Length: 57
Image (cartoon, rainbow, N blue to C red; front, side, top):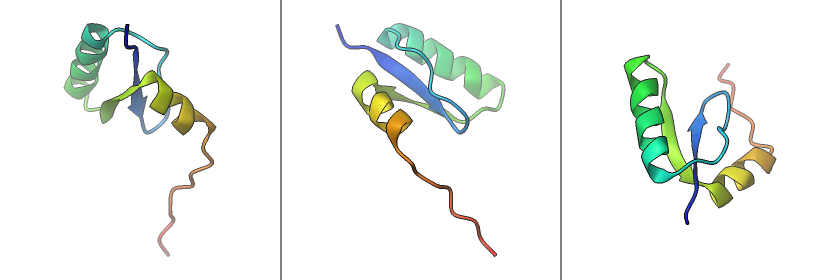
């Protein structure tokens, strides 16, 4: 079974089913929170990355 996580600008959720992920993203959208669904593997990769948000002068 494929598992998915929700990625926001602040956090990555715990793994969930596709249906749960879709429902959660819709709830975030209603609250004005940008979020998207990624695979559990991609979520782990993102969690371990050291990506820095660029700061514009």
